[in-house]
Amino acid sequence: MTNELKDEIRCLAKEKNALILAHYYQSLDVQAVADKVGDSFALAKYAKSNSADIIVLCGVRFMAESAKILAPTKKVYLPAENAGCPMADMVTPEDVLMLRAEHPDAAVVCYVNSSAAVKAVSDICCTSSSAVELVRGLPEREIIFVPDQNLGRFVAEKCPDKTVHLFDGYCPTHHKIRESDILEAKALHPNALALVHPECRTEVLNHADYIGSTAGIIDYALASPADEFLIGTEIGVLEILQRDIPNKRVYSIGATFTCPNMKKTRPEDILACLKGEREELILDPEEQRLARLALERMVA
Ligand code: 13P
Ligand code: SF4
Image (cartoon, rainbow, N blue to C red; front, side, top):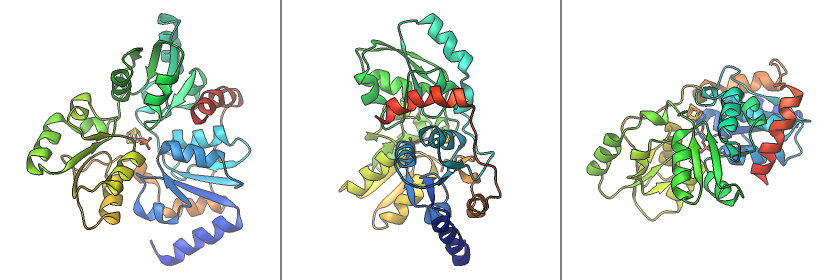
């Protein structure tokens, strides 16, 4: 990215009172022009609590939808309009309603990686950083967890007094990491700590030294006295750590894993949003109202 482009984006963002939010999986160029970079929980909180008129959410669709739901009076833009999350698309509102009919006493906990329509029929949302604490705190003993089976299984293990009904969704990027990958990486770097996202398969999580959200992994590595880390999540986190702790060795577990949708945003797309050349995100008003209840409970 040229300095001219960066300056143009920053000047226009100031002029328009716009807040540029970027997920850790965005390219380093996109992160460089953002006001805030964070995990999905932090981005939802930033979207809700600021005085900007416009939010440009550099991430995937469900993140921009969450920003719109939590900040309904602001204009929200998703710069790469076709950036979806395949895991979010795996579950439909009809699936949730069917599960509700099967388990009428259960609370529906919906991972924030889901559409506004799915959130609208759920009781409460969670992110990877809030899921365990949130489920633990619910009065219901029975939980329906959608859509991520891996995060759901991780939560169930941490909350043994709850009965968790899992859905069979998964993240295609994190699912690529195999048990053999983490075992080989550990054999190759026996002193390294394995830091892994809970969207990974259970057999991968079983060998992790730390399991947490993207922010959790980054904070853990920055604070740790260890010199070597094995990272089990999307390449964006690896790149941030290689940049921010250059004196330490940071390796990917297995090959590097990229979320193609997260990499669709270009700085030029952010500029186009700020210039008003893109459509703002509009949600169905009733879906937005109902989804807000589930998301507000999460943020609270
Ligand atoms: P975080 O909640 O850790 O930011 O993860 C979001 C995500 O999409 C991971 O694949
Ligand atoms: Fe969705 Fe996986 Fe990409 Fe995260 S990494 S946005 S869960 S596809």
